[in-house]
Image 1 (cartoon, rainbow, N blue to C red):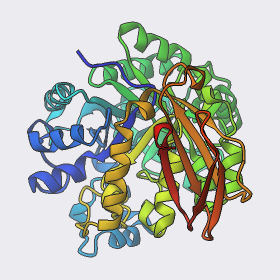
Image 2: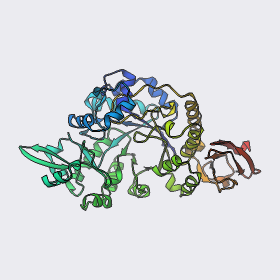
Image 3: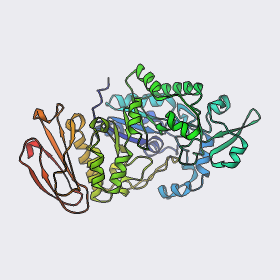
Length: 465
């Protein structure tokens, strides 16, 4: 039986197709999930992660891949990631799902179940993607249930060709909308599902429950797009609320985790829908801006809210952290993101200082030299995150006691709070490129007076003060 998750767990995201190519040397897009070496799984467990998020296991199709090969501009991205790129490296987007069965080229459902069980024996839970807003062009529903999609006319396609797709079913032309959000053109390898159709909602619930049988949690892609108010704004169609019913039915079967990819300040909305965690793009953006004042102001939000946020410095959509946070700023940003409450989200090879972002359409990634400075930073961070205080404790942002507003300080205390006079740790970060000073303390000790260098991080325990 798996141990309970800590209050503040750690997650590691891996692109399954790239991972298999690197570990097994299989042709791009092929491999056997059941044959991941034990040593690799042992390594992930020893690093202290609780959750392994495996991207790109579901069945995709020929049409989706062809869009990824032909789409203007993507070839340049592919070459930036892979100087020796060829079209055989393109498998298509894993978010253009053709069905919630594990891709036949990766060993099918049985291979994934074998991998999941091996992760469980190491105390690791498996997270997979669920894409609620759309399917790929190759999904069988196009022919079997075209009414599950938002349909259009030739006039729609002529007026707005980026957002509409034409195919033929039983000799008749069928025009369907590409999946999109309200602010951008459609994703041309996808088709938009119609959440105003109750039959579609029931069918998607069945898909979600099937996916949930294969894993321990779902990371729900662009989860806010099917909120009734967002769907109405995008498509002018009224829809029932999907998430409370879906989350409730999945959890009625067993303990299960839901993570929402979400933007537009809708994090709290998604948590109220029943999600355990919601992406925290707002902290990430403030860290990129390098503004200590903006970071501190944001960290003043309620701890209950913050404990439901996914803290990250990179993921498959964002640039590599080693390119965004240069030099010592990387360590300061990591301390603020990963030593704050919530789910700590790490991306494959982030801890090695990789600099090339791999587009999700590729199934092969670059080999880069490990950056020893970044590797040391993450080795020390992972050691800290094994401490039960950071995994189970209580967090409190301290008042701006320093004369310099660029210093951010917070403390972690044993469950029960600082009033119990238990073990505590103080985290002090100078989030600026100039020297600074901190005055303050924890645990009733004498006030500290610390001189801090640029981007300096100090982590002290009450018994050390």
